[in-house]
Image 1 (cartoon, helix red, strand yellow):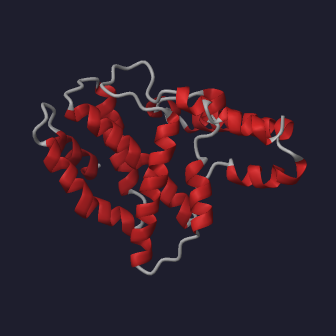
Image 2 (image 1 turned 60 degrees about the vertical axis):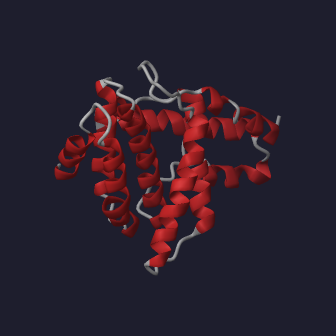
Image 3 (image 1 turned 90 degrees about the vertical axis):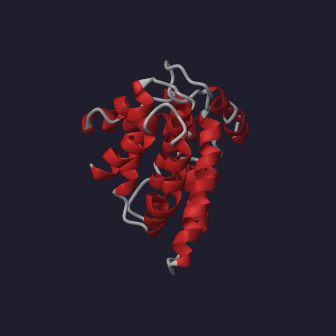
Length: 209
């Protein structure tokens, strides 16, 4: 079927709902998540450039736009489950990467296989672009959880998601992380002060971890 199979498969990302099995005021698909991650990453990279850091924009767009493609095959697995142990995380990643590799071998024309293997790989690594992807991905978790908490959703999982994502972001040594913590997060917390859940206290606890 060639590249048509890849294009057609993208629709599946619109049908996969993030954080399944929990009450949500607003559903988010993997496809919508991927689009937002690209937007976050773009702005985070702009912040890095204002500090004189060189950004490989082609690589950044490749890794951010395709970072969750493998969920077509395994679905969205909730963060607390996915990161329950290093062994489990490694097993899930191995399955996901194996199924993506099989898809490429089965459907992508030979001359494009190296390109697809590069673009659909796990993009989170120690490179600048990989670290920006890590922050952007967690940033969307922060905003998804914040949106639910702001509406008064009492599902404990969203508190856990918000806290763990903030802790993960805080640990990434980037200028854009410093900017987020100093200039963006306070605006978010101030906006959340009107909601029935104490977002300010949850935020303080996460940043103190």
